[in-house]
Length: 106
View 1 (cartoon, rainbow, N blue to C red):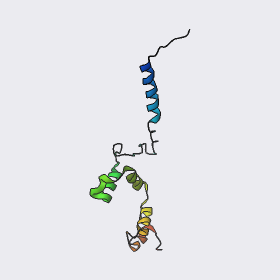
View 2 (view 1 turned 180 degrees about the horizontal axis):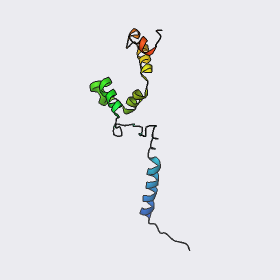
View 3 (view 1 turned 60 degrees about the vertical axis):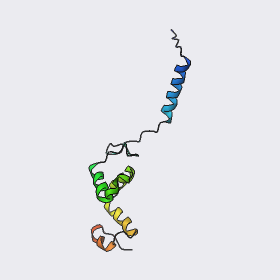
View 4 (view 1 turned 120 degrees about the vertical axis):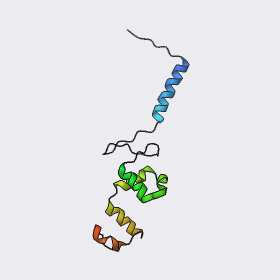
């Protein structure tokens, strides 16, 4: 038994627009190990306690200007790696942290 469906022009237009809009939407980002969605904008960003601490302690009054992806990157970066990069930029003195992180002076 065949079923006949009749669509008006407006119904067909709405259906096509709905399909086009669904394909144009940005894909959802995959959840990471801790089950959180990767935040690409401030609207999606719900900071973890560690991220809130990084934002307030490291950036101070400029914490609202820092993109969420940068905060997540800093949270995941190890202390030794961050320290090495700050030494390369001459932002901290290598002599003050050599013993703590086993960093050789170059």
